Image 1 (cartoon, rainbow, N blue to C red):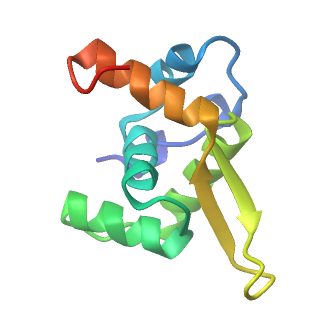
Image 2: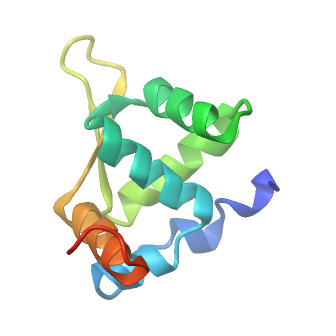
Length: 114
């Protein structure tokens, strides 16, 4: 997979429209990040990275991971916050918009009901 195509100016733009519209404009990698967060719940970036690396069967570099997490946060699909435990580590969690986007996608693809 070409890592240079996953994030960029289009990915960093906050998209207008419904949750399903936002989801439709994401790269496959960004969609996989949402699915990983849906499965894990709130998680540090390294935990998300490990989950994605296990799924892909290959190492994921930070230069690919964090710009895409930032783009999802800027789009309102995930929340990025500093963990209180150490005051410096970022933690990521699906927002309600992100959950609705996943639900709409599952309904469209014939997965679990919306």
